[in-house]
Amino acid sequence: MGIGNIISLLGGLGAFLFGMHYMGEGLELAAGSKMKDLLEKLTRVPVMGFLMGMLVTVCIQSSSATTVMAMGFINAGIMDLAQATGVIFGANIGTTITSILIALDVSGIAPVCIAAGAVLMLYAKRKRTQHIGQVILGFGLLFQGLHTMSSSMSPLKDSVVFQNFILNAKNPLLGFLIGILLCAIIQSSSAAVGILQALAMQGLMPLYFAAFIVCGINVGSSTPVILSALKAKNNAKRAAVIYLIFNLTGALIFMPLVMLTPLTNLIISNVPSAAFQVSIFHILFKVVTGLILLPLTNLVVRVTYKIVPKQAHESAFRLEYIDKSMVGSPAVMAVQVGKEVDRVAGLIKSNFEAACEGILQKNVSNAHEIRDNEEVIDFLTGEIVSYITSANSLELPENVSNYLSGTFTVMNELEQIGDHAVKVLEQNEKMVDAKQSFSPAALEEIRLIYEEDSYLIERIKECYIEGKERVLTLDQLRETERAIAKMGNEAQANHMVRLEKGECSFDQGLAFVEILNSMSRIANHMTNVAEAAEAA
Image 1: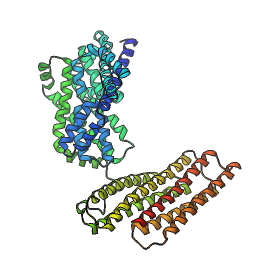
Image 2: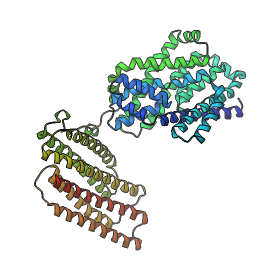
Image 3: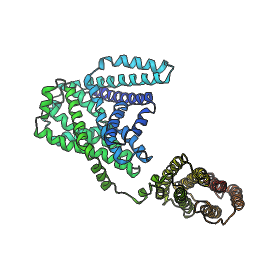
Image 4: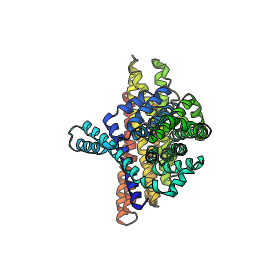
């Protein structure tokens, strides 16, 4: 193979990868949100999750994308890890559809598909028709890329070195490692198997050795999923581990099978097409592994918790006081809701104080804790609002109905306070990253407003959430809010003076003003909470 063949091979691989991605994206756009809705609704039983994972992956042509979608549902609380496991198993099987399409070798119609798809995309008026054109164009590019790859590798037939390597390639470990490396570089199992099939079409890849490479490719396909989960939450990491477990299990089953049984000879004797032989082995690998692991879903989930142990903050993703089975008992309902809202307010107060202390101490060591708490706040807010929605469909005493209606407003206000606490953290992170700090005068102004805000949050918790006797009246709370706003305005005026004297930079000033604005907004939201309490 000369340099021209190598360039042609890389170009064909690029067209193949782009075509596969473009076709999957077009299918997803053409279907709209239907696939995601189905995935969300029909995964209550592992078998249904398995089938849906397979169906969605057949459509979008990427098991990694389906797995990432499942991760998103886990993080949103829509799907638990056991349900996601079925989806991931199904996704692994769905991805084999590409190998079947390649084995059919319809590259002859690739130029027609490219032309027709381009015309539809460029000139169709309806979005849906444009998306269908994208699917057709992607399909054509996929097979044009495959044809280019196959043609570029044909000179290998005349290479004595390559022929000797293939003839003597019997080492299972070598094939396995080649497969892992190939997939880790290309970042697509479908494309890696496609290269094997292109070699097989040229008579350059015996199935015995290809089988070990396929095992390696499937294990290597876990690389992009694991990389995407490295900085993700623990459940996303566990989903990536499930993906890896699936393919490692398959490799542990099929490598001994290939070595110890006439499996590849049986495939060769019953399937005349070399490309189809590779595809059949790839499908067997996925399907058999899926059928073995699906009944063991709960065991697989337990293993992931051993590998990625549960951390303290994860247990916070549950309602501690609300019992959904007791909807309809007004005497209990208001108390349960109040305790959960109190819990949310406590997390928000903790986050706000941690963010402000980080500024005063000039570090962001608590950033991870703040963001973990914010995820819990968002989760609890959704759960509480969902519970109240269910309760409002019942006939409730007027006082309970008013209380629950007021809680809608309260939860919205509290969530926004939590968002502002995160904004304060983000401004501090910018300062720390830039190795900058506020002047002593600016820090003192932040400290004074922070103490007032913190005092106000505590008073609001007492008067609304805990049902304690008010320390401050609503008018006094409003007066405190106005005082905080005045302190913020004075601090900004003082900042302008410092800026003119060159005592601080423009970037420092921007961060300072953003922090003051967030603190002022927090006071405003807390007053809104008090007003909702008054109305209830």
